[in-house]
Image 1 (tube, rainbow, N blue to C red):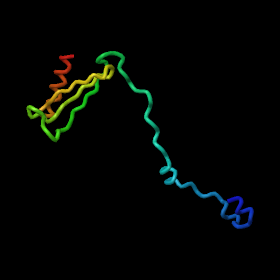
Image 2 (image 1 turned 60 degrees about the horizontal axis):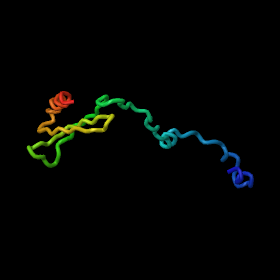
Image 3 (image 1 turned 90 degrees about the vertical axis):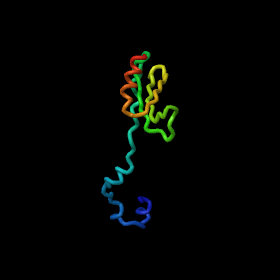
Image 4 (image 1 turned 30 degrees about the vertical axis):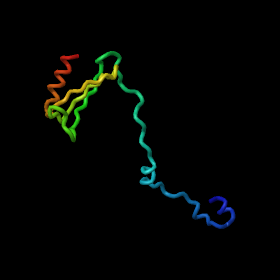
Length: 100
């Protein structure tokens, strides 16, 4: 732009700064990454992860449609319990606690 102005192809009114477009700035922003630090277990059964699966498209033997998983954060060992109804997850959690 300065070279074109110096050559006389642009007048001086074109070189004035434009207003900042907030929409353009927001569109160019990037998300900040997740924090690298996370809580990890230092011994067996120190931290457990659990998940309940929605109804499966096919039933397992015994007409089980759901399952709940428990994964130990330290050893990565997993446990799985089959269920007929999603409401049984609390009972399976109690059973898991009594077993370990």
